[in-house]
Length: 275
Length: 314
Figure 1 (tube, chains in turn purple, orange):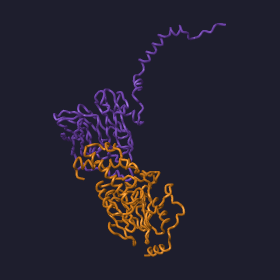
Figure 2 (cartoon, one colour):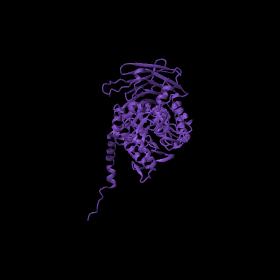
Figure 3 (cartoon, rainbow over the protein chains, first blue to last red):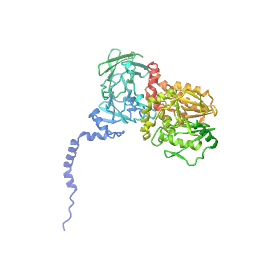
Figure 4 (cartoon, each protein chain N blue to C red):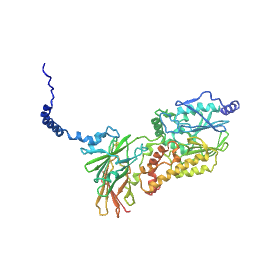
């Protein structure tokens, strides 16, 4: 009877070691890098919206993405008037440490025009902004803040139904822009740490989605210093409510700011605000 | 004439029928609480319209008089109106001859159809608002309660002028106000010293402000109503209570809301700053405070900004 010989013996293992190592290194090198990246980038959408992967790819591309609680999006839990839903973004907690914030993008997952705005704080804007939006139906609302090469994403969920004695057809019929079209109003409130600007532009913000009503909406706001230098910029889409009302938060400036706006028909509007 | 004769005979013969078996609506017993002589109220649930309450969220009241019963508000559907009619018959043998609608919101006049032999009356201002909002309000009630309404049965009442009126032989004083909805009928019964507020008064249920022309006007009118020194008030939502208690709670809440909105608008803040404030304990015991507060901020804030920030006359 022959002595049973174990197939794996220490000497054989030792001999095979270089081959194992080579295979391991090959694996590390050849693994597609995004697969490794997912470990740290919180792929699981906290709002569990099926549109997240689509818009992540469309708006944020290949850049690294993290869900970040320092990107605070405030909104009422439901929309009383779906044409005017106030939202506020505050990412100053994120801005407080790390590299400067370069871009802030917001969208509504289930709106026909999902994108809301692209804000570039540039040299003078703080990472805080408020405005009213349109909400087609209950949806996640997202804000992505770019710091360095990473997008930090926050969001909230808004239900879309008002109460029983609300009359959307009437409450929403806001035609006063016809008499006051193009009126740009603004106020500046100065504190030690910031200048808060409240701005309202009388404009229908027609999306072009309603038959026989062509698209007619404000596309951009810009903030200039007194030398005419652009110091912050905000591009908006027609998912922003009629008569856009903005809350802007700027670094203190002794001379205040000039705010300019332009619509898709080439109309230009402007106002200067001093502290 | 015939009806009247019949009514007086009925008055002689009748004592209120005993409540033989409970009247059910939406799988709950519907009950009428006596609040004064020949006067009852039916309290709605302190909720928003929903599938689980079938729309029974507003109060109704009725006064049995020798010439027929006066009903104040009729609930949010003809089907509710039918149930209410059965309930009223358990308390008085006098059929409803007059329905007074306090304002144009659906939970106060959509039940009128069940009382087709009665006169339906409201202020001219209220009727105009009913005509304006009828379709949208029917849609809302159907959407929120998940039940379809017989649309053609939701008719508009006739009009009546404010002042001293006599229904049959029963005197009432009617006040035309605007604070809650733009057309609010308030009814004072001097015989019993009961004040029927409609939604000018909310008690233990937060005030809804969707159609208020202004919280300041509403507060001024509440102040006028305090001057009537009624004994008991029936609010549009919530239980009845001593009149001053009801009027003061509504007024305190409105004053607080008015101040929050005014302060934020004067400082150039966004609506979400107001929503973030803590609701005082005094109002936290009131049903739906957070919900109605959220709605009010969204409904009213643009007007406060127009007045206090942009200087636009409203």
